[in-house]
Length: 193
Image (cartoon, rainbow, N blue to C red; front, side, top):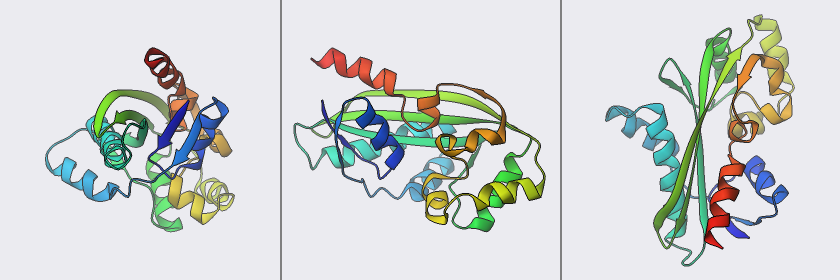
């Protein structure tokens, strides 16, 4: 099945390809921080922000690619209803891990499929993660294992690359936590054929 992925995420592309999708990557170019700030100012909760970003990315790319299925996706980390953004530096990454340290937070993953500039399907999943109580030294050692470009692109923990060691409890779909609830996507795609 052919699909356009409106995201630069290598992990999302990998999940699609593992599940026999012929995937073309066309990043949406959506300014996520600007959209988040605007939605927060309007009183949107983390779930609505995740849904809106996935839809915006999908529709933006779909408008330029008629008759193609376009998948947009977004994941938001929510700690006590506060959105935790991707870090802009290693220092910020450490500050984020310290904020999450020993706490329960939610990872909200939304996907949207569009065709001809209109959303035809969407899905949102929420996972609960509890981070262990870790020392500053342990957090620094964890961050030292992650390349800076990976850290800035994907956020402070990569479940697929050793990030599980940070958590005492993970409740949710592993694929959703990695950014793509693939089972639900496949089930929807089957209804199209």
